[in-house]
Image (cartoon, rainbow, N blue to C red; front, top):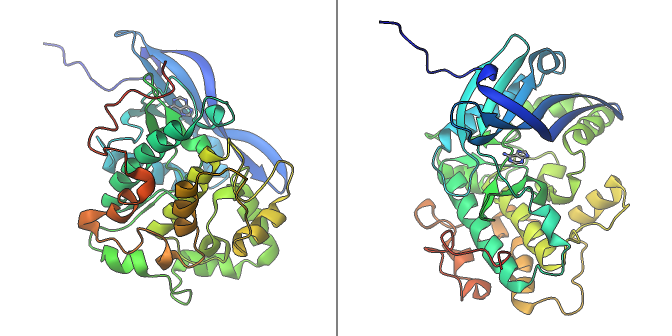
Length: 334
Ligand code: ADE
């Protein structure tokens, strides 16, 4: 009897087109992509997948091993978590590491925000789905740390899926999560943060640029200060995303063309305005999430058992049934 390995290889898929890239920024110069996401078709089943191909040589050269490992570990832990991209298998060739992921057929939420069809019903629907996804991620003791509309994907039925866990942080299950949740003491820096302090301000700025390419708009004040991130770091980004959904794609801390320094200043000073006619309930929710002090953000003090009940209970969600929201048809499907 011949034994047949079930492990797939790149020969088992047809690589159809590129649907995403993660680029490396070295001192303002964009070099190659260390990972490229392809739409692929399984030769045997004809099913479509998103396959992330990570260039082994570039990963080693740019010391990005940690990102790849974090992403894989987080996705393995988040298996079957509602609203989270699924890692279906991994394999490798001489040159690449491959992650086989759910294919989110309708691309990024980001593309829909500026459309006139994105009304308050849509804001509620996607804010509720995103909250459920964040709850699931945090329950597994993972902080995403890079929530932004570009990382919110939409599946074939326009349901929201959170992707890109390359910046995530997995807390040990032994860690007292409450302590982690509330541990915002700047003096309590871990080794990683001490290293960052040591390499000096200018290098730090470059490193920040590298990881914040196009993403500075959702970074929390504590992360900008170089403090430890924790669960409510994601709640800050959640507040920014809810605002942006309601403001037809206008980011809370920036307008187009604004430089990164100005955005950082605005975040640190919590300098933002609401457009006229902004819904008053969303406004109240956003104000309760966008607090400089991470502990003061709505939901930050919720116990793990009822995470994020205080957000679910906000009046903005009074018409939302969280138990059925993932089975309800998207308002974007007519
Ligand atoms: N872009 C990045 N990841 C993706 C995915 N899983 N599906 C669709 N587009 C993507």
